[in-house]
Image (cartoon, one colour):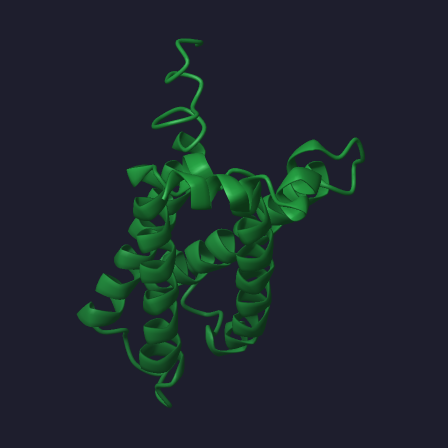
Length: 170
């Protein structure tokens, strides 16, 4: 398995992403990944806080349904850029439990987002009746997933194989 992961990591694409002496490789990919994450997690958090009542009752929520296509676009930006960064460090990331925790939380967060759109924004009485307890539970689940995914993503640099701590550095 290690040989397979090394071959991915040492492929032309992996080498370019990781080692190319240009801003268009890793720095741009990391920037786009961070930008996409801020849209997905930030947009989801905004919707969640609205559902939880941190939104003026006089301002309707319905217009915010227009955020969903942007959230999906940002998710796909993250899927592409995340895959590129994974190819550049496959041997370390794909042997780290933290990576799988992050991915589980990302997919759970997207699942919750889909449920929120169907259950909350799909309700014709949105903005006319109070939101259900189930809706608020979805909002808390979304916040938990995105907070966890961001935390696990940041910890990838510090825990597991290939991390600064694994080599003894701090």
